[in-house]
Image (cartoon, rainbow, N blue to C red; front, top):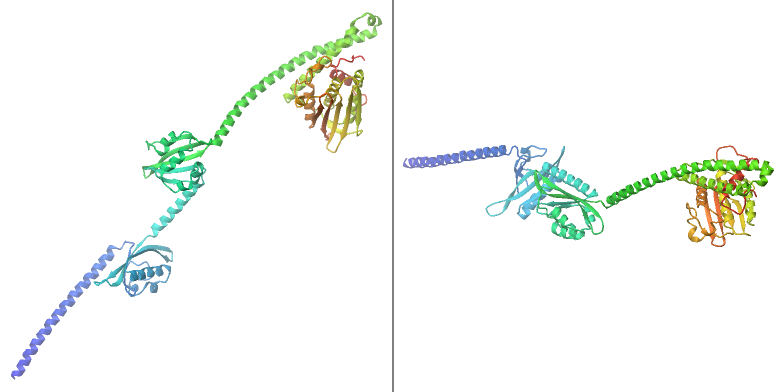
Length: 571
């Protein structure tokens, strides 16, 4: 009995001890539940506080399996990620790079950082991922904590900024102006290729931002570097803009403009642009000179026009009385021929030839003056007709035979063809031939020879007048077609002339589209060759009338030969 009581007593004590343990255990469980709830509340509050954050926070164990994850941006629910690896959740290039970062954290036991892009159905998300090892008290790595920040917008803006910078750089590089940008402390912020080439910047200075070294190089390229120094590299007043021209030692002119570099309302430096205006200055100088010369030309043209008007007026005023004098002489001669007594007693016949010849000389001089002025004023025109030029030249040559014979000069006409119809002004070509024949007779001595030859090819006809006269010095051959030029003054008393004839010859021939060629040796003779193009005008062929104005042609010959005294008009 006593043992039973003892047993019961011991059992009661033992049960009391178990109840105490149960109460203690229950208290521990309750405390643990409180801690768990507190952790849950803390986690909930933490997640709530990061609700609008772009961060992804996670914890993985040594096997890289998630034990905790916040704010995932994957195509799966958060609860599904616990206990799984990244490659089990979504297999792509981004998750593989993320696992590679975590492996390196485990292997090195050090913090790792990397920018990783994750492809989504509607684009790409880019994160800056930081991985840090989680260690126990003994320093052993037991897991990894990662913090990932969303930098997608930042990368897009960086890309856009980079593209804009590239566009700006391309614009600055493509411009023909040299660009130099300096900061407030005169460091080189930017300079383009044109600036390097314009100032011949060596390669060693192109990648340095030291404005002082750049200035030392540039100042040697300038005639005067003082203004360049004060207005660009060492500007005392950063609130002003400058524009000026710089003279280079190689003769170039550089225009520069410096303006303020303003960023967010603050002056951060200066922007300088340089432009080579050497050619523009040359053009300006040329235009200025051209304008001045144009004024001189206009003034000269005004005086020439005035002179031409004066000559024309004087010529016409002189021509009228001379024609009256000639008509009076002819009237008196006709009266004299009909009255034998008057013919015997009147001394008029002794002087009439001289009067007529000098009147013809005046008419010739006046005609030449009028024509040369018309040509200079562009008022002269040709009366082109399709005519047989062989016959015209032959008739003119035969009409002056008596003048050649009076000086005992042999005049020979020869042609390769008997007929050639071309377009020309008959009256002008007759005057050309009369002038050349007159010169040949005037300057050929007694016993000499004059040959008139005509040859022809497919495109042009050649008429040459060759004499054995005094010839033309080589130094004068380029000037004989100038107005008022005469070769030899020794013959002036026997062969007068104004020096206009050959100028008219050249003008008449060139108006036909031809040219005049002279070959001569002083003391041996000369050859004048006329080349005329073979062409026709749209009109009927004009047959040469045998009875056409014979007296007019004789009068033309007398006018053109009026400065040859050796033959009287009545001979």
